[in-house]
Length: 497
Image (cartoon, rainbow, N blue to C red; front, side, top):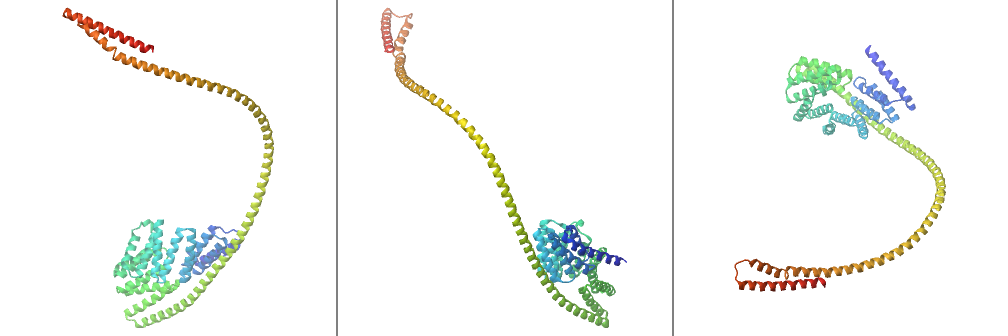
């Protein structure tokens, strides 16, 4: 009943999508609707590849018609995943590179990281380990710059898987430990299942089989929680191999039966082939040569079928790649034609808009010129009145100028008289200065000497001196007085000169 409703729901979704595609010409498909269609196609990849392929084709074509760059990039990535799940690796690689180019144009870091991982996964399947590592390291570098923890874990696990496949156990162990040390909140159930699966493979390579069995059983448990059929099939196959190594042959047979049932149910041809190979080895180990021969026949027939299918599939892939490239070229040409026609329309619209703008500018200029003419006439009449006023002012200024010239002449004459008088005063002052200097010299030297003599002689009077000495002193006083009188007359003559 559940399958019936799932079938009905999926077909209704496809009908709605096709109907929406028919209405897209009217512009009714929203970006969210396109993205939802892409996500629905992606969720169907591991349960119904044909429907996933149909929906992804519808989503891609609708996105192209709508010219929705983000939806086109996502649809290309989904188509790459659909082809990867179908083991069409060449075509898958083509679509992933297509998506990567578009995400790089959009500068969408998450989209670039996702497609780096996808491309690395395809190269891993093709056993091109160097190419796979190159893209995984590019992813790692971009993640480090972008700081997205969940993608960092996935990147570490993918790198570890490549090293495990190459049997480089030390490097694989390093990257697994890096993934394990990251915060638990960033690790989901799917990643936990993948991590345990890789630890189991690593421990098997290192010869720790019991530890490997513990890890693979944990991987099976977590893969069962999310119904990851591919991981379950791979894990049961690995567990059967481990049981065979440690001689738990019954357990190995049970795990191989589970693996074979899942591989046939979901069409995992490579896992079915590996299962027949392990069944053949198990039968030999048990000594059942008949069953071993039957398993060998089944293995050989399936290998031949896979080879024939892969040849025809590869031819189909190359044809599809060719068709895809052809379609992309046609889309490019159509886009160029559309762009050229839209550019022509834009050019014509620009010309018309330019002409209208020029006409409006011309009208505006005419109106502005008329306004300028009227204002210019008013300005000219005002200027004429002002020029008359200026003329009258000019006559007044000329009269004032003549008066100013007379005053200037008188002032010049007065200045000359003042200069000559100043010169005379300077000469008089110079003469007086000379007299004063001469007077000062006579006062300091000639006048001081007789006064000092008189004062000295006067001080001697009253002392016990003889009569002769007194007469001598009186005589000396008279001489000093005569000298003083002569000096005073000389000073008077100097001042009177």
